[in-house]
Length: 508
Image 1 (cartoon, helix red, strand yellow):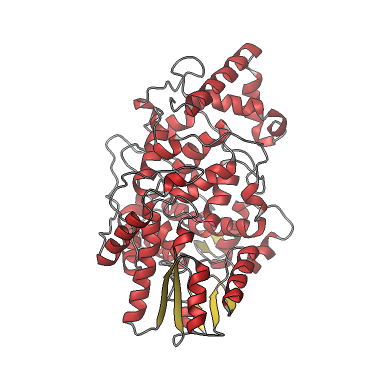
Image 2 (cartoon, rainbow, N blue to C red):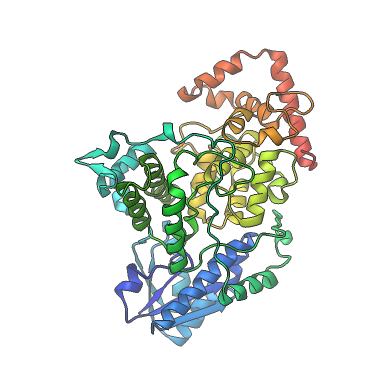
């Protein structure tokens, strides 16, 4: 029997690696898998460097590791079973039944069998989630409170610590002038990572433009992400010690010269298994209990890890494959080229896209209220934007991006989002400093120089009125639509069409 670890399951503190200390470990690098999308080079470097470091650490501890660098998973599995006939693999259960069936088929075709075990990168099991939901609607707030009660995190005698379940009203501030967060951690590449960087640069050079959906990640910054357990723990220490205090109040704010703000930057390590959700939650709570971090910041962080991350994982598990193709608003516009090249005069979009191009990252409000919001009101087909997110972000996997982008960002399915998160320039101006340096006018809706967010926002409400007006959460928005006469709406439609033509021509 052999423990098969896929690249995003680099866990040795628990699960099959820890439970089967005498068994060999199998890891497979698949070049064809890395070519499925025009992935950001930092994403490929992160994944393959973490895998190779994991291999080396196991071998240094005396563990037998079968490591195959092959064209495909099929080739890697075939090579393994040729060397170890009739072996049984033990691996973590993938996120969906169809993915599990695919792995079973690959292993069987290669001449072996496979057993699946629970995925310990999460705290809520499938059966636990299914029992909680029953036949009711997905409500994140209800699930989050359920998980708080189940785990006891930030609970006292059955009630939430501090008397409130969330502190959102304290976590929507913008920093004062002159505010600067601590420098985010940066992990210098060692020899293993340098080899991976050279391999990625040479192996995948030029491959992006060959895709039918294009893509080019030219001139990224030096690679910075943790690729080992030790580095991931240092990143956690840095967040709790230096960034957690101000994470809460400024978590929704955006500054054009502060890409990391006070965010944790731990999503890559969590999604690879280098860190576990329990340890990061408990470190944050310990900081609060020791008086080193305020409750609003700690609760906001716990909500992201214990609530949102767990919630989306199970929505994906239950709603696939339909969720990936969902498009309830019938959006059919092509993704504008500036998502790839950042070539737009819109200050907010240019800065956020440049951040993705440079380091494969932007924080959650930039993802939702800049990138996804623009895609929503512009009318981008959800699957196209989902593909871009999946390819561009270092922390992205299909289970991560699909519910976040297709559902939360583009209101594609209506399985848990109760309204579309559409906004005009007002939100961007309130939560950022982008508008002050933008050539577009935040207060103008139509005419030359009017901010594209404004006309697209009203056009979005207008063209989707039949679907959205009956939504009780959209009443205020449509009361404002009702205040616009036919002439103004016609001008808005004309400006929205002009914006789309400008975007198609690369002139926005």
